[in-house]
Length: 469
Ligand SMILES: Cc1cc2nc3c(=O)[nH]c(=O)nc-3n(C[C@H](O)[C@H](O)[C@H](O)COP(=O)(O)OP(=O)(O)OC[C@H]3O[C@@H](n4cnc5c(N)ncnc54)[C@H](O)[C@@H]3O)c2cc1C
Image (cartoon, rainbow, N blue to C red; front, top):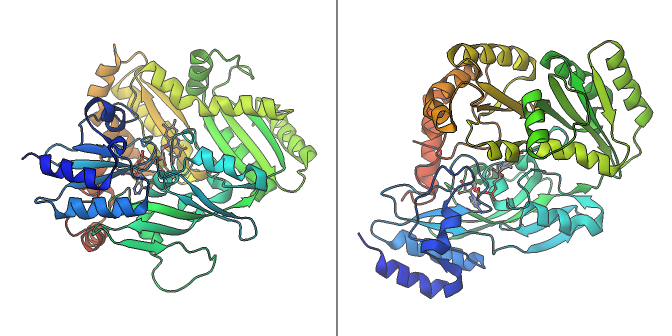
């Protein structure tokens, strides 16, 4: 079936420069991991909620209806924006809906369009000595709408929570084109079901988020950052436990970096390692709007060195050195990308099970594929590991590794289940993990999820066939 008339009707809603097809559309329908490439009927870049509403009404009126795939920065890692075969779709890119509408310093809230990038929001807040704490290595491109739709996490969840905890209100265009104005700015509002939580983490399958009210926090004026090295993962976890119990809310990040990940970044980006080689590393950050007790932090690290939990530690003496430490953590995904395709597992586990999980999973992977190379890192203070697997010496090339992806996933996810973890900590389900969902959700949960989808999107036009098989 051709959609010539439909494409013509798009021109009633959008100016020519807001509609991209053919070569101009390609960057939008090639995903971050270069796994999905199918073209939509067109990419459209709306400037207003009203345009989005009209578009959705037009898509819903087609016979059969045209699917609407919302897109922010296209940095998602699970194929959430992928166009599916036999499913005529419009890719609705929100990057031009990008105004910071209001910053209310007294209420400590920001109201923003969904297409504002996370970095742009950080920049807009600088004059107010306020922060929006979500921090991701992808924040130059990732948008607030995408962050909400994936319930993004990042490096500061330990202190501030994930996107679900940071949002007060939403505006959403629903599957029939009507607009729900839920731009609540109240911190207390117990008036029935909290509808925003239906859309947060729904990956665009229930509606298009067009605006949001977000919580702000005082900018930490004092910060101290340390890079530490240990002989084993158990010592990294012991260090976390000690620092968390001593510094509690001041601990804003505790990031784990395995030697493979650390060495990869230093090699790929020509960085002189700031510490002697060790099997495991962690990046620790304390931050507060009140002065920090740096002496107490040094003493805590000294004690851990003395009892051999830590093998080495370096405290950043200034912002520049701190940024150098963070750069190593933030470049891990980019370093892996430079090396070629790898298999990613964004998983979470009870923190108390991480060590046993890693030991069991490494052993099983090595047995199945000797010399395979797990490149593991992540927000270990939240129990979140990026358990990525590179080919190492086990495969001649990345294609060989990728051909074994189902078997490697099966090994990793078997142990995730055994240790009561989750197959998706922060990246979502999208298309990539969709068919795994029935293996991790009960029949009751799946039925409730399908009922919600049916209620909000009876024609199945909002990012269809994502999340739910
Ligand atoms: C280098 C790198 C580091 C990363 N680090 C992290 C990390 O630490 N933590 C983390 O959680 N993620 C991380 N990610 C993943 C990604 O950046 C996040 O998932 C991010 O929130 C996606 O935002 P986006 O605007 O790019 O969304 P997109 O990729 O454009 O879309 C993602 C999903 O959200 C839906 N969507 C997008 N916008 C809307 C909207 N307005 N309304 C409804 N649905 C919408 C899409 O349909 C899709 O299903 C990282 C990615 C990269 C490349």
